[in-house]
Every structure is written in C-alpha cells, then in structure tokens.
Image (cartoon, rainbow, N blue to C red; front, side, top):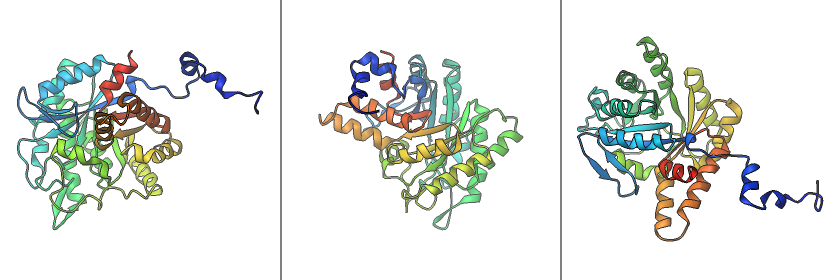
Length: 324
C-alpha cells in the first residue's frame, strides 16, 4: 500500500489509538527485582552507584519483596553478601547464610512471591572469581561440585527457582542432577546462558563486593563479538535441563535476545544490568535526559526484542507507572 491510500499516522493520532494497536505491552508481571542480602537485622547499606538500592538484611529484604509483590511484580532474585569470605566460598553453603535466611523470611511474608536465587561463588570468595581457583585459573569441574551444593542449599531453604550465573561448562546438568536426586525435581533452573564479559557490571560489583582480586572473567564469560557462540551456549543449557535461558546484559545484546527467542522458542530472560541502570540514573541527575521516559523506553525495547522476563533495578519504579 502506498500514500495517500495508506497513512500510518492515522493510528498514531492519540494515546488511546496508539495503545489499541501497540505490538508490545509491558506489565509489572514482566519484572524480576534483584535484591542484595547481607547478614544482620535492621541493616540497610545504601549502594552509592545504584541510587534507590541497598544491601538489606533478610527481614528488610522480605519487606521490600512484599512491597514489590503489592505492585504486581511476581519475582525477586537474591544475591548474598556473606559475613566472611574464603578461597573456596564456603559461606555459600551455610544454611544460616543471608540468602538462605532471606528465602525463609520472604516466603513467610509474601508466600506467593517467586524467590529466585543466584548460584555463583563470586560474592563468597576472597579472590572474587566465580569458582575454585587452581593456579591462576578457575577450575571448572571442581567448581561444579560447590555449585551443586549451593543450589541444593537454596532449595532446602525453600526457594522457587535457582539461577546459575557462573558460566562454568556443565553446571546446568550438575545442578539439575543434584536437585532431582534430592527430591527437588520441581525446582526450575533459569540459567545465565549467554552471559558476556561486559563492562556494564561495575556498580553490581560494588554492591556485591565481587570485583576480581586478579585478572578478569574473560576466560569463562562470553566474548562480546560472538553471537553464534551464544546460540551454542543456550542450546547446551537447554539440553542439560534449563527451563529458562537468560541473556546478560540486555541493551548491548538485544540482537542476541531476539535470536535466542526465535531459534529456541524457550522462555527468555534478560538482565537489565547495574551499569545500564546507573547510566540512566546519572544522566537524569545531571538533567540530560528524562529518567522516566528513558526507563520505560529501555524496558519496552528489551521486551520487544523477545524477553518475557526482565531482571531490572527499575522494577518498582516502572511498575508504579504501569499501575497508574
């Protein structure tokens, strides 16, 4: 069809018409809220690089989860900040660790909130890497044993889903195996399948205290130029038993989100990471952008690319807008 018979502006004339023909609809049900959980009671440590977010003790994390549930947000992702760290991340297995305690607190206060737990050792190790170090490298297979036990600890505490973010080869199969063997075959795995070695993680590393003490994570996280490799990683995780696959970060990898969704048909999550959040916050504080409009445009772009679940630090602010 050509002008003047076809005039696309007809369907843009007012807000109601635009909403009627919208191809992508964002709702609070699309969001998962990340929470940083720390030991203690009544602890709230603001994170300077992530305005609006803090390290929270388990009962305060539960209160925030309850508030989020009231906004229509269905899930939270828990990251733990342990009381002590060591070379092998042993605190990750502590049944009285901050994540394990927060799971119980949240399920008590908001039983229908879906509690997802990050399964990775970077927050728990003195060296800040995502696994067991041998020499100057992460030992893949030794790490799998710890990740198995970490996921099992979260399941025993009552989580609804586990989410390995370590990028070790074979970790989905290892976790699926131990969950099934231990009576937790009903627990889904949301795998960080295509997690890139990104410069957008800086504020998170401040929040979680997980900056590598030496080297970097390029030996196990994905190389940014690669997209075919991302598809291979995703397919491996699906074959090993992943129920949901994730792309991280979101904005620089919208093309990957689209490819994963089109080529697998699986539920796809995307992580709108800390650097993406903090850039918008910082630019808005300078008066350079309209924070609300840029936030909503960002989130709709992630869903339009194909993500059905969006992990975002904007979850509560966006939900309030969507709820009117």
